[in-house]
Length: 448
Ligand SMILES: NC(=O)c1ccc[n+]([C@@H]2O[C@H](COP(=O)([O-])OP(=O)(O)OC[C@H]3O[C@@H](n4cnc5c(N)ncnc54)[C@H](O)[C@@H]3O)[C@@H](O)[C@H]2O)c1
Image 1 (cartoon, rainbow, N blue to C red):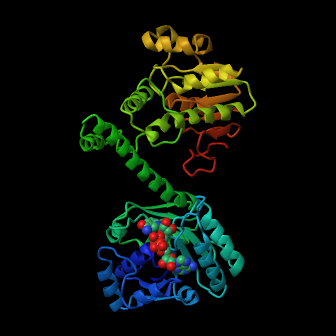
Image 2: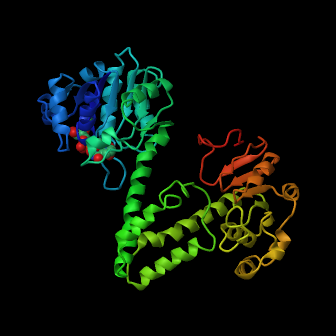
Image 3: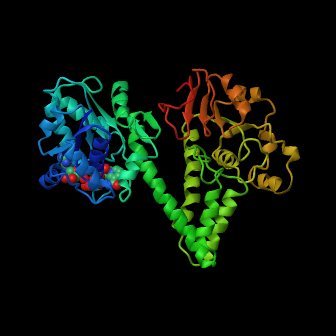
């Protein structure tokens, strides 16, 4: 395929060489004539393992050239990859000046081009940027997005220092587009790579790089705070994290990675607090660990805010335990939510087959006696009683039985804190705590 790459820095140069090595005919474009000159003499513009050899070989095979002429590059390619810089402004926003500059050139040149042209945004950009770029090109060219041309998000995951190896072994190839045709073209660029290709909507693909890199920063900082605590106690922090990483069920896994309601229960809050206190007693600063509970409180307030905004007073709870399948109410976020709503004057009824108030004992009973002493008066044994009474139904645990109950529910506001997958009657109004109604993965046939 004939491919042009705009921006010949770390990402652009590596993509230029690696795509040429995979057999494509490449044209590089940069505003910097020195970089263009380097490419045209078979040299890389960056220092990276293996890139010099790749550039020299592919240049000698006639598969690589570069230009400062945008028009020539766009007219002589079917696909363009945009890899210009997107630095931060002093305020932390993205400086999109370079990318919009490139988009303006596309607008001008595509006006003259008859063939379908795909523009893959490899630079890291905020969700919505591809849409803006497409609108700019449409305005300038008079062409239609996803018909005459397509702007596709295709985030780059390589790391400097191992960029060529990362290019050929990416964790994943992500393509964000609403055009099947454009998606298939970009997918074909990477067919020699072993990685899974995920096609998502454009905004989802755009945010992935931010989510990934923020998580990587979080991992490093978590390991550092744990390391600081361990080393103060004479414990080998590397051994601790090695053991931590051996747990592939709960630690290094997709477990817990589901947006939803606050965490609770008798262990997580207690043990987090314990580690924070240990750090405090060691005179260590652990701002990351200290922020975790704050985030949890904010999630609780978010649920309270959604429920209080509905304008109804009768709220039915499906689930009150700290998670499905247990009668443990200690530090249950649903108990805290119910307690807060009661304090605000809402009426509440609760259905949870796991919880028999007469059978609660020990610290579990003590906890509920402190928080909702009249819990037994709020519990109903029959879910139909709850449905007949409430205006708003809040799903706070992922109990299998609730799927059936929800499928028989009509004319309610359903506030889902756990993303329970149920087919809902369209007369219900569905609200997920932190997933939007337009989310792809929303359970089919949910009414929004
Ligand atoms: N460097 C990385 O490891 C890495 C990894 C993944 C993603 N990214 C993202 O990829 C993008 C590029 O990063 P980079 O490190 O390669 O940047 P870079 O600064 O090394 O290269 C950017 C290039 O774009 C050129 N340029 C600027 N305006 C231009 C224009 N109008 N037309 C053509 N070329 C123009 C510059 O001259 C420069 O050569 C950024 O959005 C970055 O966040 C970088």
